[in-house]
Picture 1 (cartoon, helix red, strand yellow):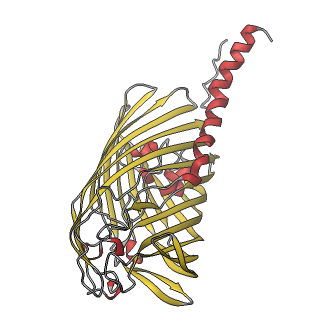
Picture 2 (cartoon, rainbow, N blue to C red):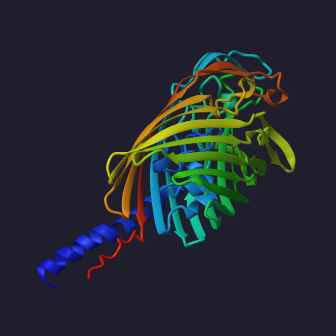
Amino acid sequence: MTMHKWARASRDWSRHVAPVLAIPAIAIPVALASSAAHAGGFGLREQSSYYQGTSFAGTAAGGDGLASMFWNPAAISFNPGLSVEGNVTYIAPHASIDVFSATAPITGTSLGNVGVSDMVDNGTLPTFFATYAWDRWAIGFGVTSPYGLVTDAPCSWSGRYYGCYSSIFDMNAQLSVAYKLTDWMTIGGGLNVNYINAKLTNAQFAGFAPPSNNLYAQVNGDDIGYGINLGVLFTLAPGTTLGIGYKSQISQTLNGMLDVSVANIVPVKSVNATAGLTLPDQITASFRSKLDAQWTVLGTVEWTNWSTVQELTVKAYGLPVSTLDLQWNDGWFFSGGVEYQWDPKLALRAGIGYELTPVPDSTRSPRLPDTNRFWLSGGFTYNFTQQFAADFAYTHIFGETSPILLTPADPANALRGTLVGQVSNGYVDIISVGLRYKFDAPQAAALITK
């Protein structure tokens, strides 16, 4: 091979093959993903670098970002030919738990006011999407993490009976198809397969006066559940789309172990345990409108049926041994954003959002210190070629200060004592990077000469 041919082959490899290999490499660490919840409850919204730049405005209305299928399966028809996308998002949350007063169960002994300076752990969230669209039919596949949570406190803090370490790991595989009924209407639907693993730990009251009470309980279980996704995409005018997507509830029965130990080290008892959990259904409505060659405006309204989560009961030998009284409400998210096409290669994005937590003040727990929050995001896309593009986004979330008031007046807390405090200094920094590759690049029109 001549030096000229070798150089040309090297350039072709770097332009066409390397990006394709890089995208699956991003998605491979899905099994490592665990994170703090940032979509209300323990949901995760951060599935896309492209849409994060607008605070997830326009997610269900289609666009160059393949992750739109996560919210609306009809959107997989938006990009013709074969396309793949990989995203990696780093989430750095912060929330403090300030304790005003805490008492032990039954005895009423004071546990002091030792709080937690940072209750929520950082996490990394990878996702992967692939779509193929023909003239009318399209098919899409995605691997995502719709839910996740890691809160961590030493089991010596004043609220230890209400939680020490809690984690939720979730991975979802989505397969969807779409069909273009007319030039202005596309429908879609598919199947979701969801794996979830949960681990909850807390100090266990044993009838001794603190601090001699050093029993700890841990519940760890997992399950696979199934759901459906449906959607419709309307093209209202050239460059203007309206999308509505639906994801069904998923019923999960976590099967695992309930372990009791001394000082969280010496095992005392280990039994089989189960816990039922219904993951909520969700409706997302979005629009995307291209005002001119440079400006595009986007918006999203999303409803999540978190009111399905009323309590979490752990059973052993078929009998309830622990109940978390949650009494969650429905969750709402609103966002708006803009996109500016700086030049043929560079597109800039910005967006704001506001989210209403499903967690009521009366049952807010240190296991999940969720509050209302305000989103502020920015991002960009750089098209290296017509086929290969990179997305980048940054978000800062401002959390509200919200109360914690947990007492034995709720029968579920009879053996947890009293915890009065607040969630404060809540914020999140999110950085996301994505790569997209289109195998079927747009073909330039042939030059006709006479």
